[in-house]
Each structure stands twice: as C-alpha cells, then as structure tokens.
Length: 324
Image 1 (cartoon, rainbow, N blue to C red):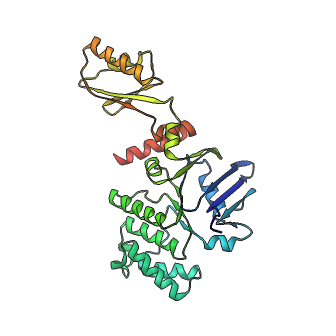
Image 2 (image 1 turned 135 degrees about the vertical axis):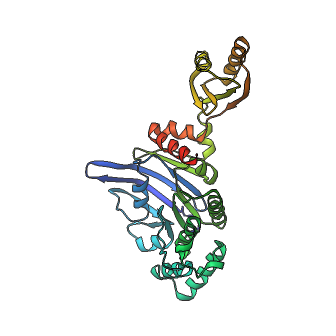
Image 3 (image 1 turned 60 degrees about the vertical axis):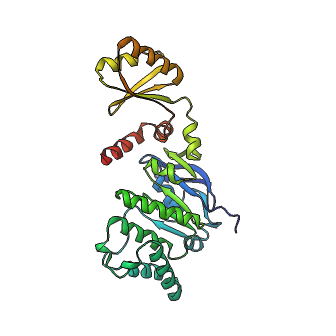
C-alpha cells in the first residue's frame, strides 16, 4: 500500500434536501503532503471534511483514506486518521498525560503502546515537564498541542487540522507551525483547513480552493499566485497626499483601479512598466514628493478573491482588523 494516495475523493456529492452543498468534487492527496483546503464560509469545506472522515454519508461518490473506503472499510480508514477540530476537545479536568491515555483507550491502543506513545508525544510537543498538571492551567497554545498529540496517539497516517492556529499568539502560532512541519517531515500527511491565507501559502505543498460546492483550483500556492499575471500593482506613498492625488492617479490610462492601503495607494494595472512611466511623469508635472514606490505581483489574497469572489473578502478584512 506504499504507493497508495493518502486521500482520494471521487465525485463526492452532498445534498441537504434540495440544497446542493458539495457538487461532485474529486481530488487526491499524496502521502507526505501538507494539503490545504480553503474557501469562503458556506463553500462546502466542513461538509467535505465530514464526508472524508466518515461523519457524514455522501449522497454520491466515494472517498478513500490510505486505500480504505471510508464507508465500506470505515474501521480501517478511521484507524489511520487523526482529527483536530477547530474547538479544543481536551478534558481540562485531566492532565496532558491523562488526556492522551484516555484517547489511546478509546482508539483501542494497547496499554504498553499508549503509555510509550504518550511519553514520546509529550516530549516531542514540549509538554513533558508538565505532564501531570491539569490542562485547565494550560495556555491556548499548549492546549492546541495537546489536541494534536491526542490525534496522533494511535499512530495516525493522515492528520486533519481545522484552523490549527486560530486565536493563538504569535509565539504559539510559530510553535504549532514548526511542529506540523516536523511531523510532516517524518511522513505524516496533513490535511489543513484555514482562513489564514498566509498560513496556507507558507505551510502547504498544494492547495485546493472550494467555492459554491465545487473545486475552483488545485495547485501549488506559487502557481496559483503567478497564474494571475494580469493582476499587477504599483504601490506608492507620498510625503503629502490629498484627495486630488488619488483622483490624478485614477486618470492614468494604464490604471484600472486605485485602492487605499494605509498611507499608501495601490494602483491595479495590466502593464506595470507603463504605469511606472505615467506615475513618474505625473510626479514631475505636479511637484509631488514620493516616499516609496514598489511594483507588486498578485498576492495570494488577490488569487483567493479572484477564484472565490467577494465572499471571502469579509473574512480577510475581519482577520486584518483582528490583527490590528
């Protein structure tokens, strides 16, 4: 089974009454990949994951985990997967050790094996020195690490991670990402769902973007970004800027849109070289003093908005505001 894909979805479809939530989607995840699964709210992400993990039965189509059909061989399929939900599922009245041992019992892991595995995971996750403390005293980042360890107690081959760094501080985010990379380097396949586009770009080998129940794109983050050659931008900041400055830039023949980004103006264009020439001429004619001037390719956020429409824009804005 060494050449088997970690995950295979063929024609997965889900109706809720007359509502089509997931529309005949197909994709494969290779063993050892970190695979991102992104899309706006209501796009079908959660429904797809519920079908892939055996929680929900597809209306049509099939799904396999490490070669095991999720419906026909559900016990075998579930034995090789670990699931980390976006909301903590640890028992805060128990210690980290007790959470792992209890989870091992639920998965049917033998006593010797679960104790040995629990010790290994606590050491790997930098939790061993606090193994006997109740997790109610743990930070959110530490609790997230316990959640991931619980999902791996049964030697999972495929790990489903739902928003693994949501709401965590910068230090915890870096720790979780480092941990995911280390686990992946040891051969673990990771299926990552996130609204954090930067995280997906940094972490994933490939990304699938789902929108309105259909797969809009599957490719590497860089290929998705560079596919948008037509979406270039020039970003400029002036020592002094007025409403007239923006209106002047909007009149440039090569500029299709001007966006305000903090103290900068971003000029969307199909020809950045021509835009630069026009900007320099406008600066000279109007006596403006530029502070910074940069050309930009399409960002991952641009790519997602392009592929999913305005639905994801509110999520991006919400995340930016939360960071501020």
